[in-house]
Length: 137
Image 1 (cartoon, helix red, strand yellow):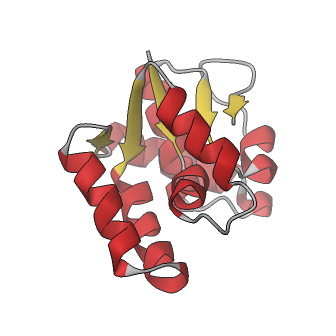
Image 2 (cartoon, helix red, strand yellow):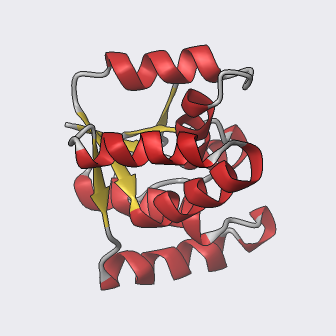
């Protein structure tokens, strides 16, 4: 079992001033399954850390990645094709490649749950393998 992580909870866990910090940090520290981060989420997290936090926050996250706390998962060609389908199908929602990659990875791994603060996108998207995502935290 794995928990697929979107950018929001990762950023909130790094930012003590974020209103979602406590619940995001608790989710990530208390989980007893693999924490999987799509590589596109990794890039987005780097961007938001640079904009909102400090280099030290980003480096703390990378230390955790290097220590094996998170598993970084690159998209496959099939994942990217699925991202294109999702983005075209949810055009009116404005679904971006990062969120689409979270959905595609969850589908590939057969995971019914995602860690996200993005209720708008992840409640609207209907994954191919379950009726709806279980959203955490």
